[in-house]
Image (cartoon, rainbow, N blue to C red; front, side, top):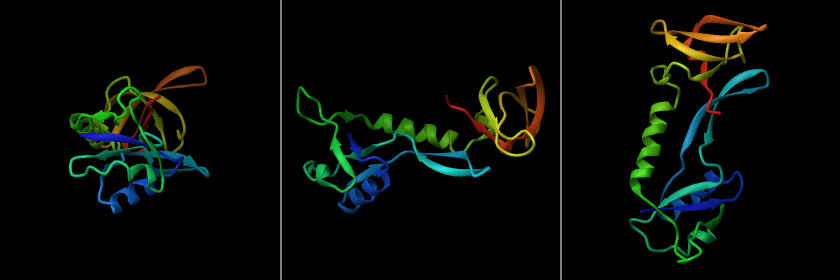
Length: 164
């Protein structure tokens, strides 16, 4: 079974490293995204669940050490029972599977109607709707600009899925 620990802000990686040094098996889901920084699109890894880390309890019974680990704020504990909330391993496996499908963006994972943003070229930063894959490397998008809707063809590697 897995449990969840709340980390201190922006210290998920430190908490993971320190827990692993103590012999715990951890899982910190990371999502690879493109961000617009200093007028450039840069690939970055971001924590999927900010300020949370998953810890496997299969081979350990030392829960008290987790709260005192550098980078950890506290374990998530049930108020009624006083025991940590348990997470089924199938949920962790589903998170891993979904991250492998969509991380980094696989053009085959886009479906008609998905919201995307163009990350490079003359259409950079424009948001649109994915229509279809035209070829191995190109995709059709529906873009809204100048009060008109236009269908454009762009290089698939310059697309970033919008999750919001």
